[in-house]
Amino acid sequence: MVDLKEKVIVIDPEMCTGCHSCEMACSMKNFSKSHPYYSRVRINEFREVNTFIPVTCQACEEAPCIKVCPMGARYRTENGAVVTNEDACIGCRACSYACPTGAPVINPDNGKTMSCDKCAGEEMPWCVKACTMQGALQYVPKYMVAKTSGKKHAWEMKEEYKPQLAKNDDEPKFNFSFS
Image (cartoon, rainbow, N blue to C red; front, top):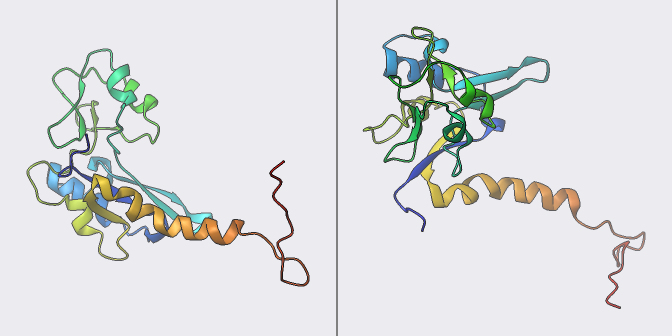
């Protein structure tokens, strides 16, 4: 059954300007330091093509990071976030390697992994609050993810794959066969 109250961070890489405000907000919230190494959200930069992609834990339904942790240090919180119990973590990084997005990052102070906890106890994660330039990060109910992120992409796919018209513009260049 879908939890109608659970919220997730939705990322739109096309809207990211690479300002790093989300990283700074996250590091300030969790460590009172303004440094990207202390952030649980990272901006992957592809400057040659002017592309910036925010990466943070997506709290996968079947989280591979939980399954591969040899110490059982990764677990799901009440708000749906997947986090690390630092007392149990040995810093092997198995969770980072297993994660499809590479979201678990290393705490530079203790060498153990850390990932987004959705700013537990806050109404909205600090990274989302800080993302004011273009709104690349949004905090929405989980059931709204497809609507939030899929609508624009569906329109683009429709335009890209619509049938080409013949020269007389009356008929598509293909036929369906029902034999």
